[in-house]
Amino acid sequence: MKKTVKTLVAAGLMVAAASSMFAAKKKAPAKKLITVGYAQVGAESDWRLANTTSFKETFTEANGYKLIFDDAQQKQENQIKAIRSFIQQDVDYIVVAPVVETGWGTVLQEAKAAGIPVILSDRQMTGVDDLYLCWVGGNFLQEGRDGVKWLEGYLKKIGRDKDEINIVDLQGTIGASAQIGRTQGIEEGIAAHKNWKLVAQQTGEFTQSKGQEVMESILKSTPKIDVVFAENDNMAWGAIDAIKAAGKKPGKDIIIICFDAVHETFNKMIAGEINCAVECNPLHGPRVDEIIKTLEAKGPKGIKSKIQYVVEEVFDQENAAAKLPTRKY
Ligand code: GZL
Image 1: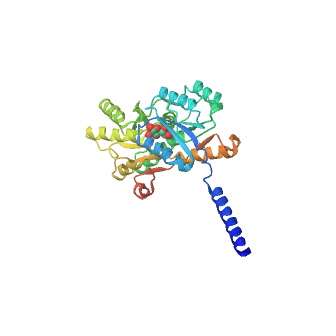
Image 2: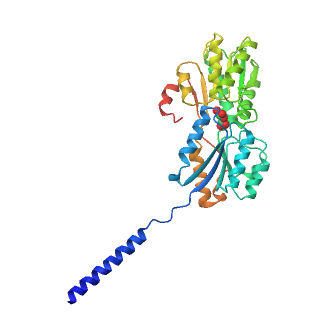
Image 3: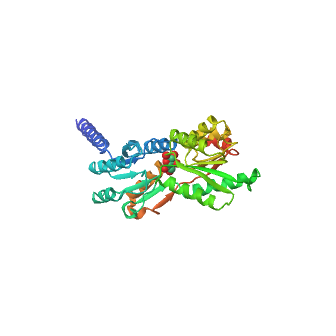
């Protein structure tokens, strides 16, 4: 009898232990997702598509985020509306790729009043340094200077460093950091060479179609063009179509230097149609993720620097084929 009772008691204890174990194993409350509102410029270029993909692949539920994404179709008023919507939704962080540098004070003040931190990615804002936590992106002035430096070396290599060189600058969206910095680097370079002349400068709005349209018009009105700086890849691709339609050989009759260095541009360098591509790395998602995780763990004091540049290289027809297999965008 005693043995039976003992066995029953032991069995009862085991059942109690097992059920408390299951109780403990009951799903822990789901960790709260960090909600991020991302105000993207638009979808104007292959660089922009790669930048958007980088954010969408990084800010996933699996990585602890709820991403609210807005495409502003390259209009500042749409980005401002998006930021106001993020404030109404009381997101945890607002990330902005500002289409132009000015006009953000009022809406960033509203974000500050709502206690929502703002992080900038890609392009910069001016006059609101106290209203955003930090910025990550490319060094646009250095990119312009790197394009000039490459041209100096190339002209020397082909024995044309003493020639009269007529240069066209297809600018990006006027007022965008990438346009401001690249244009400054290019203009500095032209001013430093008495045999270089800027014969045409016009915005192609970072799009292929506008780049082609502007280049067609410049080709009609400018008898001798030696070099085209296109302030992004897509405008260079449009310029190539215009140059071919005018019966000239891009990359040979007219040297082409562009900025971004996305995958298709490598193909065009290998085909001999583009001479040089200065990289502007669009993979900002992981960098902004790192910044937010730091803020979550340590607060603003954990942010090492307000301005954080991404790593960028210069590519040309000599290294394009070797580099292409490792390109991530
Ligand atoms: C650069 C980015 C520019 C790219 C263009 O960081 O702002 O905008 O160079 C894009 O392709 O449209």
